[in-house]
Length: 485
Image (tube, rainbow, N blue to C red; front, side, top):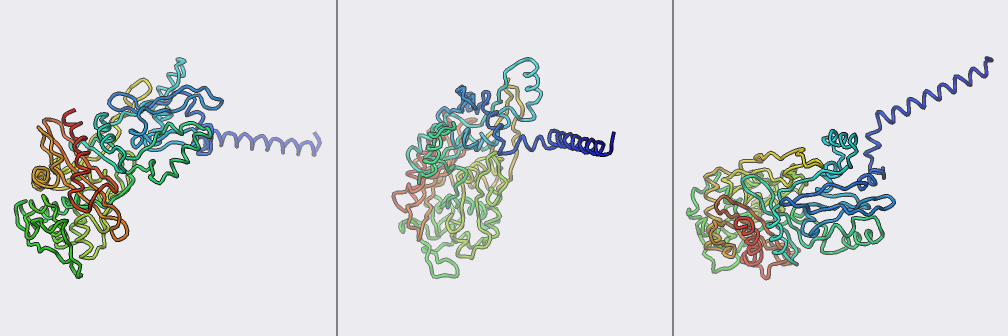
């Protein structure tokens, strides 16, 4: 072989070796990265090449996979009562991807989770059809329906939790949307999605988890908890030294109550909570100081960005650097204090559960396509928010509010109900209609539930009673669905 031919042969051999190395590198090292790349359209096609697993509520699926036998997609996702369950399920769209449980549990639902490898391999060897697994939620169908119908055409949200376990029994946001309107890949699906995104009422916003509101007077329970835990007061019947009006520290600004006829001057904690006296709890907050009040709020879950249900909610905030007058306003749920409805349901749950705050969760089980359990949730405590002794005192305050105070519309025959109304100011110079809040718990026999409801711009007037007249009846419907369902 002459020298030029030998050089060409060696060069060709080097090229072949380089090709072999590159092929093995791509297949052996980069395969997973390419397979999971967000721009790999084959993943989208594969997701809808066989029936997707279902999201289960109360033993029944609230999702399904419809056979369409398209050129690229064989199946399309659909929902049962889509608007009611959208805040739980999220969407699964051929054109727009997935969100919420449809996204976080995509591996199980699509059947691609590594924990399903043995099942998938067995199906392949036996000729079985490939299919996704199921996600079993903690949602109660009755509680979810009660919350959705209770909110109706109002703009707001509701969350219900089993205080003993942390299981989320209802998670509703209104107005809502039907994920099925854009689950395909046509121009009509694109138009439907664009219309929802352009809607000023924000139907795709999960207000229960992703919107924070000033909690208003519902926060007074946390202020009372700090007062008991620090020894400032010993009992609900202890009398406070509260002027009416109360001048915010370091200012000449008077903090007033909703009505000057309310018995807030030097009121006891019990009377102060019954009539939701701003002066009483604003002064307590200022006297406690921002650090003690913040420490108590954080035990209930504020400023915790790591809460997963597994959907990550927005972080509820209690400010760290308020001035004394700001702290007085923070103590009544105004100023810079903000909370999600989930957060206030957690507060009610911890009080009802003798001070123990359980980690809230939405997924009870993950199942393979043959219904074999892949994983089951293990309940765990998030914190000891208050001592059992303090929890009992807070329960006394909440139950008095329902029996004697602003929360009487939440009373349920045959059940022990505790609650707290709230009317939160917002907008430029508090010009917006107040948010109406109600947080509560109900116990009847071996059934328990804790609830938080917020209605945006739902208060007819800037008075504490608005939370009791608008939000409390909705909470009552949810609680009845659980304890009497």
